[in-house]
Length: 80
Image (tube, rainbow, N blue to C red):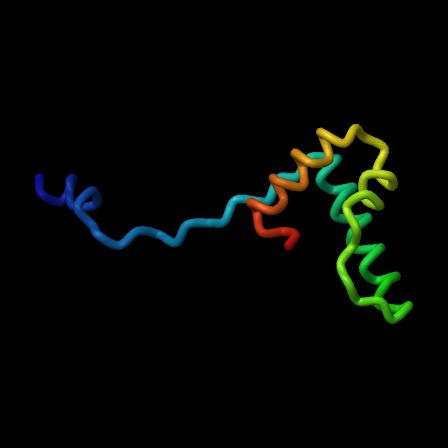
């Protein structure tokens, strides 16, 4: 009988698989644009950060949606 329940008392668990990162189409577009823009700026010798107004102008979405999605990306540590 103890054999049936021993698996529940085992303190070691199987390693958890990381869940795949799920990004909305807008989040994907933001990340693509940021990656492209940063590469372009590095080639030009300007390794500074990307101004937020440029991001808003480049992505075809309203500012509130972009702001919300950027916040989600920040929480996921995908942008800094």
